[in-house]
Image 1 (cartoon, rainbow, N blue to C red):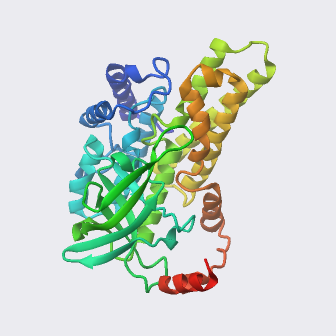
Image 2: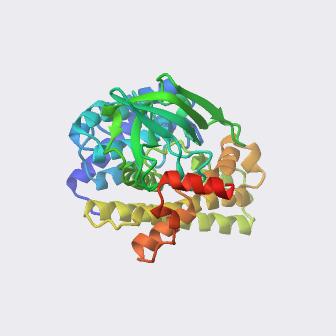
Image 3: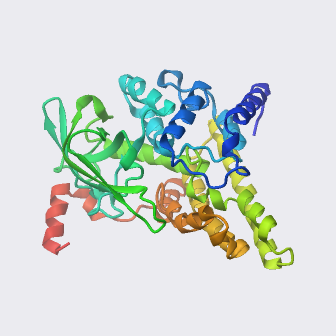
Length: 404
């Protein structure tokens, strides 16, 4: 990293602010503390925004701080020992907001972005559908022209935080007679509007973070279309790039499920409960430390490349792939190192172990990341897909004939 005097001053400011406002969220004060208290999370978010610590790299006209990637990495370094209650806002800060900054109109940036950073609005993504599987471009949710906007009808699933979201960013089909990737539009949906129904989906941890969302003639005004009509697939690509960057860098994921099995916490639990003569546990702990430091250096390297304007087309995918694997490895290592302590000492550790596999999927599966790296990074040919030359209506008719 390249640090100058201003970076040192910013680090000192962040460190002092955290000492004053975030001590209750230090790992050694409370482990695995999540954002269950939404009013308290909003209050903390507002404090950060007032201090200029949200949206560090966002432009000033979007409510951001207008700083660079090095300062953003400095902030992540200083908050690494905290579990800040930012989880409700991670999709807005790490995924939706940056895409609105990049692709939205000036009116959308001024209307929506400051509310994301202040904690006044929570966002979710409405992408996946029960009948589309991993083929996101096969979505069937339709948007039909109505006076001054569109009426959306369809079902979305696996929508994180939809049960408490104020807005959702949805991919919808606006032109069924175009090839499936070309007839998609991105729209910004008021989750409190008539025709929007959210049903929580409870997972094996006992939580209901994911949801199913039914859209029944839900109205979206023209001013809430993000980008051009039928250009949603390109914008979705930009948004997913931001999502991979957020997942890999930790933006807005403070309080995430794996925090309880982070290296510092596992080491602290082992020193408290472990057997000093257990060579296998010690070896696993050393391996975990090495991986922890390597990933920290990787994040710092990518931040420096971004700061210097040298980011590569697949940096986020490489980082997301490695960190997704590391999340799963963290849960396995915690189990080997802590043994039964992983279950009875801290419920957050048990929850993290159960939740870890899902985090290797968030932002795109390993297979998707490998395809991106192969095609965009290594220049390998894309897989053949005859359906790309067919309109979406033709694909549906063909699938019906085939009985699928």
